[in-house]
Image (cartoon, rainbow, N blue to C red; front, side, top):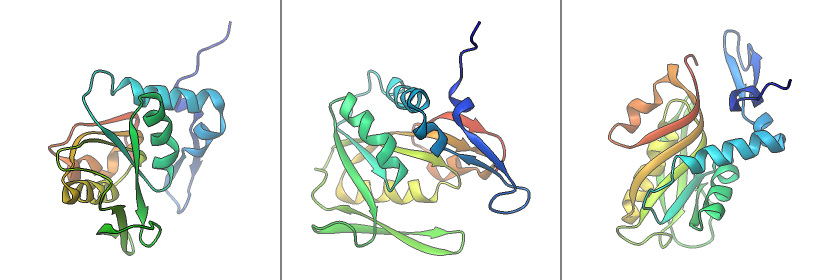
Amino acid sequence: MAVKKELADYITTIPDFPEKGIMFRDVTTIIEDPTGFQMAVDGLIAQLKGLDFDYIVGTESRGFIFGAPVAYAMHKGFILARKKGKLPRATVSEDYKLEYGFATLEMHKDSLKPGDRVVLIDDLIATGGTTAAVIRLVEKIGGKVVKIGFVMELAGLKGRDKLRGYDVYSLISYPGK
């Protein structure tokens, strides 16, 4: 008799990467497997059933991979949050802190209208800094973030603390870093 796999079974864990003591959770093995990828996308969609929203915003780059099929399946527009300098029209930008330095994300200024209701989707929540920057971008343009979804969460890094006041879900949660 075959045992049904859970979504977490499609994650490959690499011990001591990128440094000793870290258990690296590789989400690319979900994407590489058609069943795992379908489970992830279906799981993200299931969390949005009955929710009133207009757009999905995906963060470069794996947020594109997971967010675009959700937007397609739910017949919603898909908006890109990209690294600085990658978008061709007028943009708004937001700087955020990385472990070693800073980075900048951008969205097109005209991608949302005031009051548009937005769901953010990304592959991973770790420290929450990238997602907090995307929230600020959406709100600068006048959008309202109504839900935030992740395939995977590294709960030990307490990223949800930066997202207080927002409806956040993850399909898989790991207690450590």
